[in-house]
Length: 212
Image 1 (cartoon, rainbow, N blue to C red):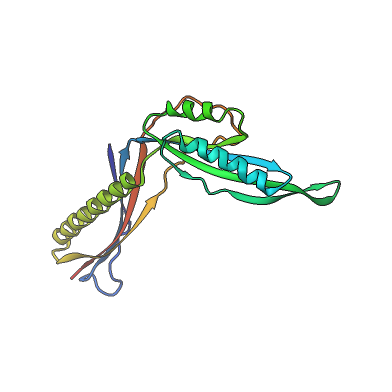
Image 2: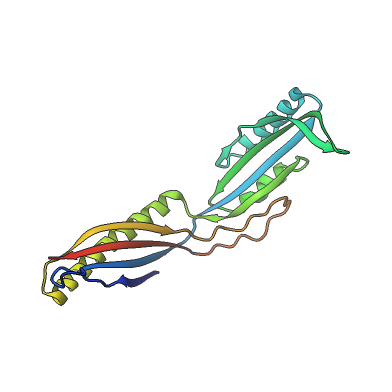
């Protein structure tokens, strides 16, 4: 589904000469796109008295996740001293390790396979929801940019008829309205029922039209 809006926010003429009008318009266009990938972000946490135990634990989890044969990004863990405040003092006890994984699935039912594999592992779900792949977003943005450029040319032609002058597009600048991001589920251990809804990609074109 597409929507289209036009706003002439300055319908001004050159102050000294009516013969050379300059017009500024804003055109807004949008297109709906259906998400096709389910994304699940998980953070693995583990603490121990020595860093070797932390590395061994995170390595074991990483091997387990690789064996799921589900597409993901991440797996580069961080080892830090486990420091915190206790009775107004900053103390450090052992080490803690953190590892982040982002899973990308065509079938959200694979999340059950992931969570079953992580039973007994200390983890948090930090993000979940359907997303539109970047390549689809870029393709939609390019489509809207071309469409807005064509509409700008049409408006220039229409203004030519109005003023009986040769009107042309002097410049165009584009801006994207960012969509609302899916809900986050920090510290979660269970997932809600996946819901897929259309995402609206919206672009604005700020157009300068000159007539001579």
